[in-house]
Image (cartoon, rainbow, N blue to C red; front, side, top):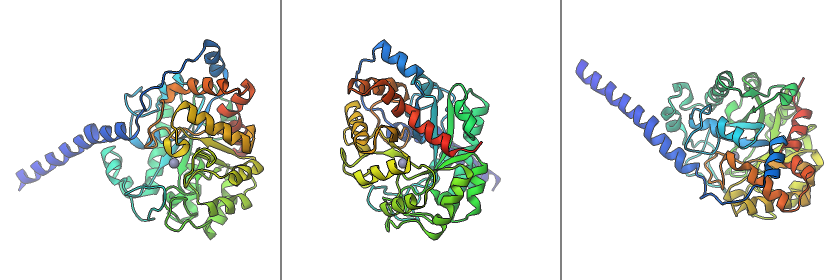
Length: 376
Ligand SMILES: [Zn+2]
């Protein structure tokens, strides 16, 4: 009997080792690919401008994969050394807490969850294996630990925005992590969350998703939480929100909101990309739309495609309401990793935008918004 138990225990250890050292890196590498690098010249003067500019990225899922983000990794898109090399000053680290099986952009059930194996493979605590709230708390803890052991500083209040060096802001991708409990909002705020997407790929207790099966608007709980989030200094993120939830939220919001990562229908049709009316509504609210770097957002995932989407968004929403939302490490193929960002600056300048305007896009707009939303 003891022998049997010992062998079983050995087998479990071998399985956990295989998952951690082989299966997880394999999928991380495959799902977060870099498309064969486009060569794009970055003149020295552009490099210098990019270095000085405040550069902010409104969305990356790098926490999910359990990598050591303090070290430069060979896989995925972003870690601290690569963010620094890319001249990024502020990175939003988003916590993914539930992804339906058979993921698609059109319709996903609310109760499906493909993440247990990933959380087991990353050697996270059993509490995280099946529970979105614990997944959010664990990823917050991991970001705090990273900040303690590196030169990353966390943005929790307004002054933190103006600290030197690389800064990180913690965001939640979808409020299913609250489990339908109002009190969980305060708990997650206390854990460091300062930005929250209402929904991810499924409808939840707060709001419908653009990819949900019902796509409803804000629920009664959602309506109660919008002002509470604003009081706590939490920025509301409408990326992935259903069109009804988008409209309901803007009717209630008293503070500027973001659509952290996505595209515009004007250059790329798609369930989650913003219509011209939605772009105008965000501008009216004083908000900022982050343009992503992948096929579902811009159709043509190249510097030219991203530049086209940004230019289109500016033409409708105005220069003060557009920013960057890479979706690095969000199971997307990107045309460059975080180190390639100066190329985007070069491409935007080459498209005829002024340095002032590019400065707003790169991070000036998002910083203005956070400055208005964060508390003292
Ligand atoms: Zn997303």
